[in-house]
Length: 171
Image 1: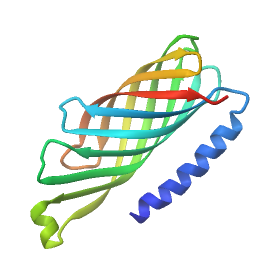
Image 2: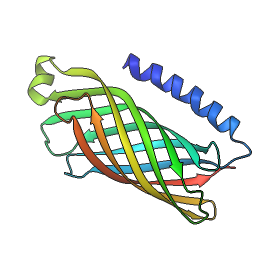
Image 3: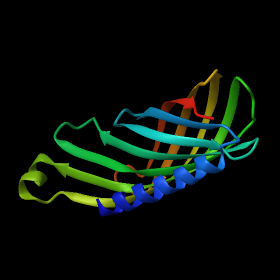
Image 4: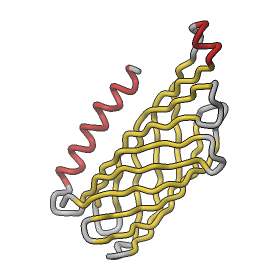
């Protein structure tokens, strides 16, 4: 949990600086939901996105997701991600391709482990490519996406996810 607190502080600092530097460019705050392709995990993200140039953008996110397949096992992930995007700078439909990094903790525990006090908490690092399309409707922005995670978690080391960011332009 201490690792998450440090990441939260660093993420807040970077997000604040990124948004401050992009006052003359487009900046967005968004919330997103995503699900693994096999349906085992789903999650939420809160993000800040700044277009750093005409064709590049940066997103910083707080991420929380969990196992939903096995009711007797608690598998919870929390952390932060940073993603860099190349986009075509189109006004209404803007395809993009990005590369992201996730760092966080996983809390894995079954009901039996919890009773015995033997739950595990591990650091998880992941890299992922992301492909999506930005749909811009005035100040409202919708970003459906697909990701492929490659991570250090031994029971879910490679997985695909799909989701949608819904954001507001705060220029």
